[in-house]
Image 1: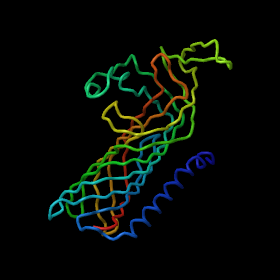
Image 2: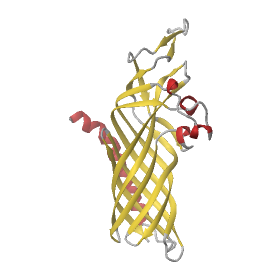
Image 3: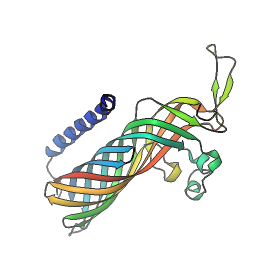
Image 4: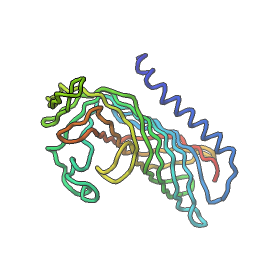
Length: 267
């Protein structure tokens, strides 16, 4: 138990620091327009063996005199913790046999899918996204999606399962290169979440991204309760490349129930 608490401490402290920074910065502002709405959502996504705390700052432009519709941007700072799950081959050129719009409709190529079993994985991401919502008095219904950002995480160990993959090994002198095939679960590899997040749709996506639908009820002018559902995609990279498939990226997808406290700053 002590070990589990220790590895959660750093992301939680980072989240609390960001929350304090956002709150202090926004309260120092004055509203530039009655058409603007901004606030902070402190939420938690959950499914069995997957946990996703997050802090999301949003700023929306209210459209029309009745402010029925709102659109704007989000900045989402989130951590993701995953226990005992499989990651699968990520690049669209392998999973769908092509990239771009072709990958959105092409069938899955099961023969190209390798598995990375992770006993434990975690990462922290910061993403810029978009949000749209319908305002029905005290009730708001909307959706949001991460577009781009970056992710980082600690090095972990996973077990690669592949019938055709191999890694290239050399001796210390850099000579006598040899290919060592992946055999069942015999190949333990170091992995790490790192790099940029970019939404390119479907299997073209890269990194850690979330999409969300939600309903929010305002308790009063300064607080609301938000309930929704999130689709989360995350990736990790092998320390060494599978030289047969020319791939080091593996992806995990999950659907999470989501609940949050929402704190509007001004309307």
